[in-house]
Length: 635
Ligand SMILES: *[C@@H]1O[C@H](CO)[C@@H](O)[C@H](O)[C@H]1NC(C)=O
Ligand SMILES: *[C@@H]1O[C@H](CO)[C@@H](O)[C@H](O)[C@H]1NC(C)=O
Ligand SMILES: *[C@@H]1O[C@H](CO)[C@@H](O)[C@H](O)[C@H]1NC(C)=O
Ligand SMILES: *[C@@H]1O[C@H](CO)[C@@H](O)[C@H](O)[C@H]1NC(C)=O
Ligand SMILES: *[C@@H]1O[C@H](CO)[C@@H](O)[C@H](O)[C@H]1NC(C)=O
Ligand SMILES: *[C@@H]1O[C@H](CO)[C@@H](O)[C@H](O)[C@H]1NC(C)=O
Image 1 (spheres, rainbow, N blue to C red):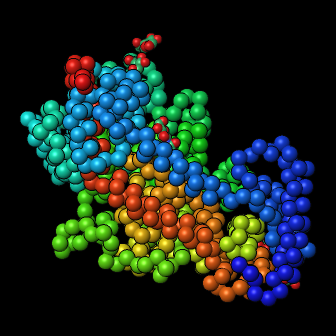
Image 2 (cartoon, rainbow, N blue to C red):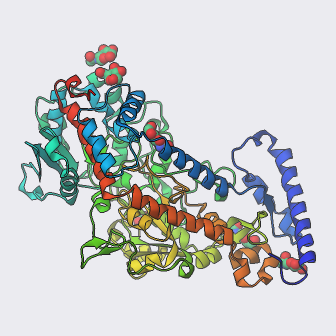
């Protein structure tokens, strides 16, 4: 890594810049922020960044970062996942003991057959079903007869289908009174396929399947805490329990957020604020999710994982940034056992694998051979790593939420990203990069957002679905966001970074992206069936809901861009383009791409989803029974 001309001069000059930078930084840290020394990240406070004393003297590198956090995040992720894999039970006896240790009761009846199924199919995750047990916990408090009644009633609600098992055979149906709603959804059909291998081993029972992608069950805090204040009994039938709720959408009477607030404890911020009222910033389309408590150096803070446990009760302002809080579909305030593909924190749904992951289609399955009807190893349109483009790729429709109430879509998760990635204002990002490239000498500087966007973002909407409710209509929506032609899968695989953003709910393409030879950057506020099984920073790169750090993620893996080197007035600009790249970063990125692919191939298979659903069915069968003790597994 020797710079071309005058390496010594350039280096010593840079060193002295850095030295001065460090001095200034250290001074500010010690003088003004001594009390915050224990902060967990190593990035200076905003106040230190804003100090322009350095650039005034022509010094454009603003400081030095002792250690980049990403290598450590990756290293820890790998260790953690290795440990998780290696501690999975190897024998039935060990699995039973682990189950008892975790949940303080016996496994459900049929556990031995489940164990055999898992063994025969080389299922890696034998013990990791905490999410599933959590989902079912509320139903332990009601009797078997009550649980059964609620399951049947739930299936009478709009957009809830029913999968019924009778004498060892499953069928999907709907039992609605109104004829408008009599098509069985893909989600119910897919669930039917998931249980097909073991249906003959299951007792008679009914599963209400959510036909929509959004979570449905939001039980108010008071009703969860004092169940006797709510309807204890569902004897009166669905209408007495749900009453006027028997409409598919809100019809202007309430919203998801209004329902969500009630699940929060009475002393939480969400309950205290009049936060559902319209606020003025929805018209300000340039405001993308500034954290209200915009803390230290937020361009350089990295998410540890997904935001599936994020507390909207404590951070009510954040709900404006997530489309699902504006969904048109009505939620259900009663603890009904409803099976859904994803849920954000606070929802009472029971998670099952999405039909997009389980099924095989050209749009949602990597390397799906439509002609021979099989999944191949490598997609016919895959691109070799060396030929992949270094930019971050995303395409999608302007979905992401409903319009209850209307007018908030500019703040939804997809709109925010597309706007951020096509911002041409005079904003700057603080970019941390290795200088010289490939070294571990990390410096930072401010780089114009506009230039970065041109260099590293390939992000656009391909269609508009909600412009009627967009402030200013379609013309304004097109003015505020980049729109581009629909993408072929080939275009995805041609990029090293594929971005995965939530839509109306979870993103159905995640498994296809993982399976590809590209690395996935994912932001999500959902927990899904596999959340306990996958490791962020090993199998994919997690992105915070603010997206702010995405520029620094790119700078770490792909090295400083020209705009960054120019902004820093770095002598590395004199290096040939090939020497300016970060080889180590690129190797690390490729490692994530490979690990994601490997995960999909060994843990994200159809049969893994079946093992999950099989185990869910056993737990469900025990809840379904009048005598639950009789439904315990006994060796
Ligand atoms: C950039 O750095 C060179 C020395 O490497 C210096 O002469 C020049 O003034 C700097 N330019 C700016 C705009 O800071
Ligand atoms: C619900 O179950 C939990 C644990 O099983 C128990 O502590 C609690 O008292 C139960 N609540 C009611 C209302 O039955
Ligand atoms: C509900 O239960 C709580 C304690 O579990 C009790 O204090 C309260 O009086 C009960 N309320 C009603 C309406 O029965
Ligand atoms: C979210 O919470 C659940 C249950 O409390 C826990 O099992 C899971 O590990 C948490 N996930 C994350 C990412 O913290
Ligand atoms: C970004 O940096 C440029 C050059 O340093 C400066 O002129 C501009 O005002 C900055 N933009 C903002 C929004 O601070
Ligand atoms: C915000 O948008 C609405 C509808 O698009 C418009 O009627 C209103 O005048 C706008 N408010 C401001 C302050 O621009």
